[in-house]
Amino acid sequence: MFILLLTYQDGVLDRLDALLPEHYEFVDRNMAAGVFLLTGRRVPRTGGVILARADNRETIEKVIAEDPFLRTGAVVYDVIEIEPTRSAFPGL
Image 1 (cartoon, rainbow, N blue to C red):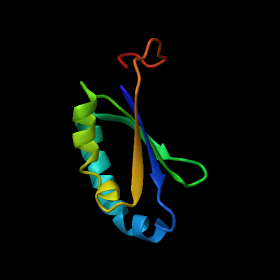
Image 2: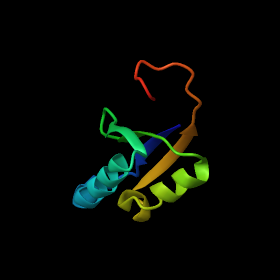
Image 3: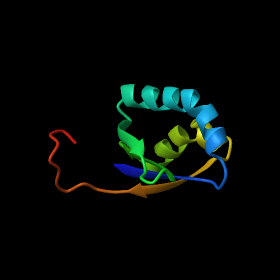
Image 4: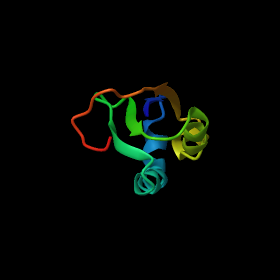
């Protein structure tokens, strides 16, 4: 399992807003595929957070490479791999 922390680069909010429809398509596609389990904005609006599931880091790296935010250099991703030991959510 992975926690993906997105950090917006300085001065890119206008560019990010223009990319939102394409970014949401990317997110929705990965939610439907069961790769992304939870997504949301950081507060304050400095980036985003995604809880993701994949077999390995290489797979996650391939998935996030498709994000228009990353492709355009508007965000930096921090990929944190975790091994859950307890969960309040069945099947997680």
